Length: 114
Image (cartoon, rainbow, N blue to C red; front, side, top):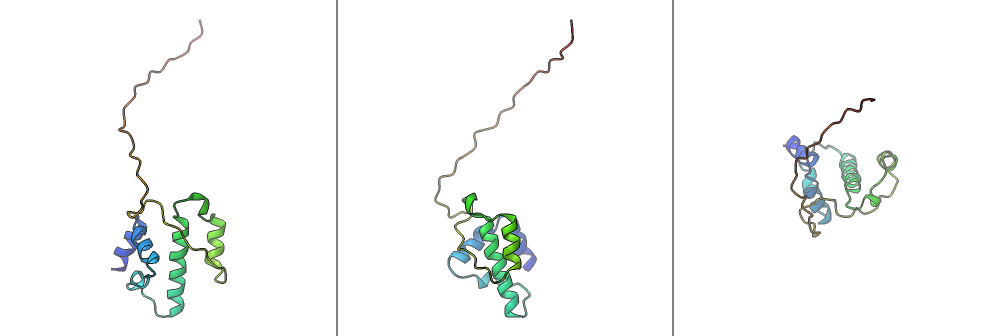
């Protein structure tokens, strides 16, 4: 069960994670995680929080990798509240559809001296 949920999150399931986080209902995300101590649960919540910061819609709000490493290693660092991730199903932004592709032909000319 844990592997299925992990696969979902790794393949774009952060929409579900965001929904739980935004509703303040994160424990269901941790139900299948093998955690014996509250400290492990806190570490997992922190990782989810940092992950949500990394997928925010506005690239300017996303942390740099150096900041992510610092956040993961410093448990005393206060994390900012994440904004809605990019590409969530609940997003109210209009989606821009890509135009249909076309195949273009090209010719190659070999240049030779006279």
